[in-house]
Amino acid sequence: MKARELALAALFVALTAVGGGVAVPLPGGVPFTLQLAFVLMAGALLGPRAGALSQVAYLLLGAAGAPVFAGMRGGIGHLLGPSGGFLLGFPVAAWLAGRLTVRHPSAAGYAAAAMAGLVPVYLLGAFRLAHFFPGEAISRGVAPFLLADVLKALFAGTVAHRLRRLTAVGGQEIVGSGV
Image (tube, rainbow, N blue to C red):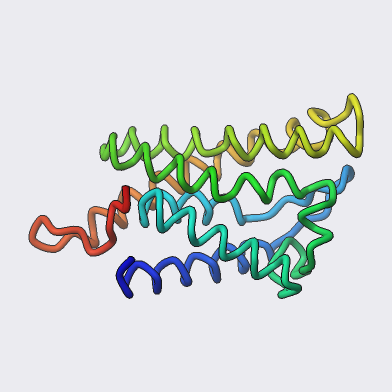
């Protein structure tokens, strides 16, 4: 991995952390944040490998106690708690969004890739949340967030596509596809 890719991955670690600082607590233990938009942009802009790496680094930083998770908290307990599945879905979401944007580089492809990135986050998140709230995972961890997350995904796909086009110099991408 090139130094530029590592630097951009570090940037998305920071952006995801900032997105977690914008947290609105909701009943059910899963707050509303802006993290997911940055997760999806990381994959779409950095490619699957560097995008996923940025989110693994984010999770490791948070697990080590750095206050990067929602509400500027940290610690392994957040990965083991009710919202842990959603967090563990971040690297998968970034990888999937990155993989799909490499294959479908159009504006519609970026939007679809970002939407597809929601799937692993919701699957892992609802599965983990069901452990804490049997029979209520959908009503507590999916339904309250779905519309906002779809809008965040569309926003992330649109911004990533425009940024990708702006960062192309002489047909050469500044950020890698990292397949």
